[in-house]
Length: 249
Image (cartoon, rainbow, N blue to C red; front, top):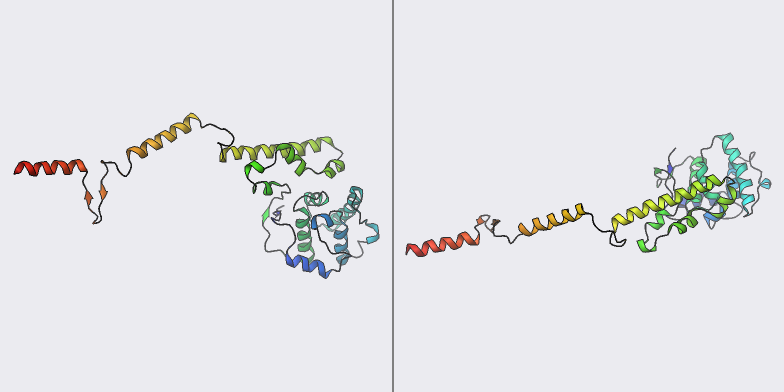
């Protein structure tokens, strides 16, 4: 199933903010990534539409990982009963404060509950890594492999996931993506990485430069149009014509 791309900017669209304000929540979200992480505001939003399914005293407005997992476990059970199509990767990204995950979650909830689709949305796979931010930086300022792992794998993810193989798979995916990005960087700027051109590339450059030198605009073997549109003969032919005129006298 295709979902919207991760928002390029932090924050929420104006229509979504107005909708949240109309719900009279217990507190207004200031930092979307932080305030929606524990699921408390999500439960409070759905309590306005499904009051019988959400009793707020059973939710903890804490910041611990245990409180987050407990709240979201209850919310996900409700989603399953009501067949609400919120993807697991968006929920996990919200829990672990991944860039753009909470924004995407709130916009999806807005569309589900109001039956209105935001105009700025585009279909595509979700990506909660910092890749979009990294490509905007100069190559010299981009993350190393170890920094990429630190940026894209939160401590709470490793605590919440008991399977070490799953964690290793996530690390391997981050490293593989980093190596692929570095390979593209080497192609874009080979001089920075000390990459020397191959024999084929050198031959292509030499053939191109030689063809330009033999067929340049100043070459005497190429006819050039004058201002009247006629062709001017080369200097050699003009010289012989003047000699013929001298001999005729």
